[in-house]
Amino acid sequence: YFTQFGLVRVMDDPLTEEPKATSKMVGRAQGIYVSSCQHRVQLLMATTFIFESGKYNGSTLAMVGKNAVFDDVREMPILGGSGLFRLARGYALARTHSFDLKTGNAVVEYDVTVLHY
Image (cartoon, rainbow, N blue to C red; front, side, top):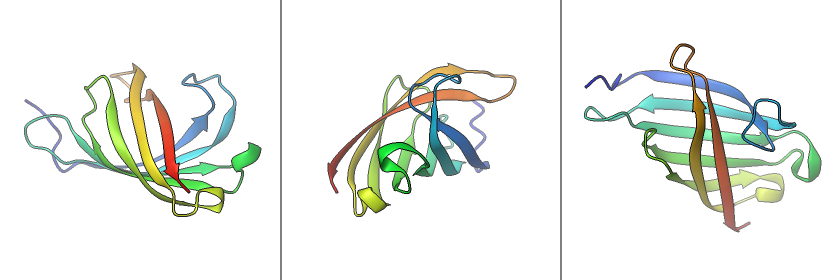
């Protein structure tokens, strides 16, 4: 089974209101992901959601954790932030809406619940 173990990627993707490429952009999702499992496709992700418009403009959320990409829903912790989300704690539920095997591009919804900020 080919897991691409050890592969490191860097991302700088649009952050949109809805999980559609045509949805209004509200910021960027920047970070790294590493193929971290030798037995299945699983990533270690470190992502910063950077808000560039709307009521959260200038604020960030930090998400770090395991992403078992072929699971329907993946839970990852929110471990901090800045601006309105300073010292945030919570979790994000990730759901893949589409994935293009040729380009590697995916549309992923992150349903974020912040329990403390």
